[in-house]
Image (cartoon, rainbow, N blue to C red; front, side, top):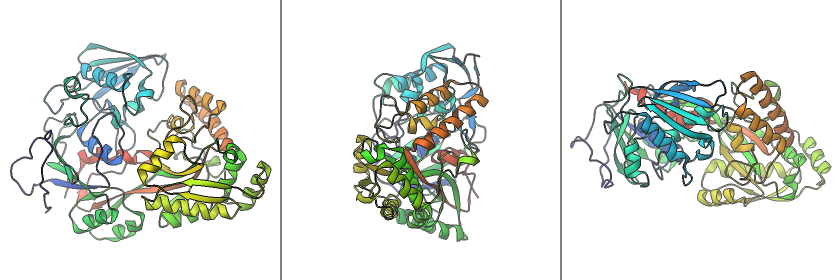
Length: 509
């Protein structure tokens, strides 16, 4: 039995059903943070995605197996020139009772791609030139040029389809109650405490969802979140701290759902003179003992990374290149001398004091680089300050923990592509290599998968040579669950942050 938390609801929320203190089939999900917004087009972090994946569905999403799953689109066809995608919609309803139609798809995508849109994937979806709606169940997307990863971007949570009528009435209101076509409908948000969704009886998958409702309870403090799971106050938690993973694994009442997908890396400001040279960036890759980072910051839970962070099974992965680098301080010193820094240099490493694993990774890197003569000064603001400096290019190099967004190799563009925006969240500031740009451009438009594989193989060779990042480790990412919870899946690889979609399969035994 769980204690239901009551409090004043937002005016936009509908009231909780009845006065029932306890509900059969209620799942309590402890989240590591409270969303800043539920705006469907914005990637506002893993907690927001987890909730939105209960409320919304797109034309496609990623399923529990990590593969593309047709959702509101029942099927699709592509013309031989890959310029027209025709989607057939299934019979589905929104939470307001209206049918999902081609007009809703058109309105949703046009909202994402509008000139004044702040949608996270506006640029990627900007290849859509026109949208035709020949009938209520048919949508044609006409592209300005071939774009092989299109369906993958349409499968992201931020590409959810919402009612055209809702967009007209509430599209500019960030506090409007969301309406989707997912398995659960929004009912209540008690700011600072919890958000509740309840079963949508009109969901298009027969027999789903199994739960009556889901309560997303916010626990910013990781120790409080773990204790809530251990005491039975919640049934699932996200972001299991690495120090607590073993105790959850060994518990008779709990279980750990882990995947290896996110990775830790160093990004460089390539306008900082030493880091403008590939030899120096390579030297740092040779200098760092990955086991020191894993043991210092992650309680030994992680896998060393000596190549590029491409998961096995993803295009571009090569067993021959997974260990391109190794821990070799002598090689690191040799490369520094070749680059003109035989005695090392001083550099400022940006991380954050707010998250222990970021802070401790920075400390480990500082100690490792001191061994080859690089004196590292740590810059450890809070998370918002760290993000601001990252986005402004205000660093010499920085600690990053992240993952790709999609299962298509075009995820690499966000990290490696130069183009017009040379300073952004996931790239090394001012890095701009024409060879890499051309290969990524070619990869996006090449239809033959065998040819695409060759292109990304060439990309990997050039990326290892230039080394705009130093990859340090694959990071375990875990959910903690009560053993009575079945059906929840931690999606594989990069898709772990989209695991919230599987709440539609959850049952409490």
